[in-house]
Length: 636
Image (cartoon, rainbow, N blue to C red; front, side):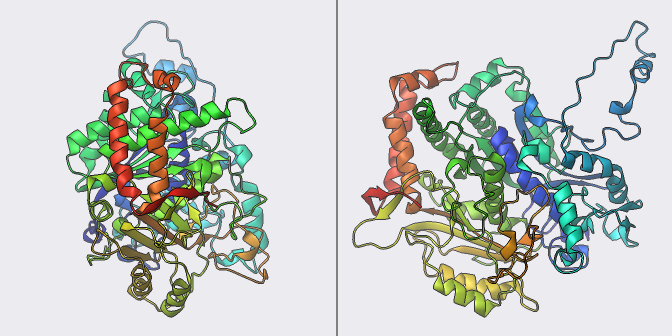
């Protein structure tokens, strides 16, 4: 068992810097928490498809906890408390002690008067209260005792618990933190009413969400939360303001790095870092400072950086909209320059303009909210979780077409320093979980190639923010430098993943890479789980419990699928030319007022910094805008 779990590429440390990144991270960790021990189709630990230890700290004496350092303001954590967030009322917890009991504990070291000050309890929505109520039972299951599952049914520990020392087996079937909606069976036919009742009673609604911790399932270690206690609104501040916050605020950089080092020291074989950073605020500067230190300490260890921008914060009718957009464009440009220097790959994800969501055939137009951070962050999480699957597998493929480690992915997509800007897109859902290799090959053969302007994957998570460039006249395709395609949840009975990967290979060959030997591609059995904390944005009436398409609408479901198949694509190509061009223009055209605002603070940007940034982005633009016409057309 232990030998099997140690196969693969090693551990990954995750950083989340800022509230928007916190929302994306919450959806990511909810999915990971749901899959603990329940992925793949095997019956035992040796058949688990994904390595839990890639992203989680595993212990025989505590539930799995994310290997995570999250930086945010204190108010953004809501009711979340690390290492016992769901057990604050449990016997023995300091939160359950009375004032007299707390005072009594100091009797041996202090003879004077004791005063106890309690912070008012944070608001908890129905979802968090449900988690808290079931936490003691769930924790009992995780540690080998009797308990109940998410339906309230008795759940006994397995007799072969010695083969599952971390308590993972069975967690994916309701024994996690009590937040799984239901097994697939009762969702259709008999038991459907029970599933609908549970979903209606316990699901997270947008009105329940104020901060990302309002729907975070996974328990966090005490070192995971690094809270900025200084009050303030950084929504429209400059990227560089974060350096002043670290230098003069109550949370010096060294305290954040201390937590980062704590998790790094636990790793046996660190394979890389995932860094989600809010770039439209001073949190971008905080992320840059942390990543610079990590780059110096870790050397060539790969870092996958993701620049998150919140949805539209100022309506177009507002008189401040033009100023807000100008500030945002400058922040994105500074982030592209700064983070692409310290990251092995940098993926911009502007949540304010996810192209393809409006009018998407499988998203509910009446429930989708483009300005909702809860909604847009969920889509970003699906794409990011899917493209990182290949190097989190228990049995990674070591062939030339699969990235067994984050380092392999980064080197194939970014073979040069000026090719570190990558774009993310996906088909969500890809509603054909039972497609055979022949059916999959036929379907992909009918799709546009990966390098055509229209693009085969409807949801563009990186390029929706800028006008989509066109190849020069006489050319029909973009130039792809490096490409990685990941499919999950398509697993017909009796078929192997290698057979499905043959269909992916044929599809990728239609869009050859110019600088990498070939495209990376991988197929995974594990679908993306739809939990009670995922927003209700799918067209449930035409999707079955596994995300399969029902073109006749005969299912008539009122609840979302339990899981969905996904196809995600990460690429470095001239398709990103419009995004790079927009960043370069934002720096060139920055007004004196804006430059003055960015110059504030001990590490603000001076004239030489702006000149260096413009020169660097100009070089990157020449690469990404190769073979592109000067004109652009608006993306749809």
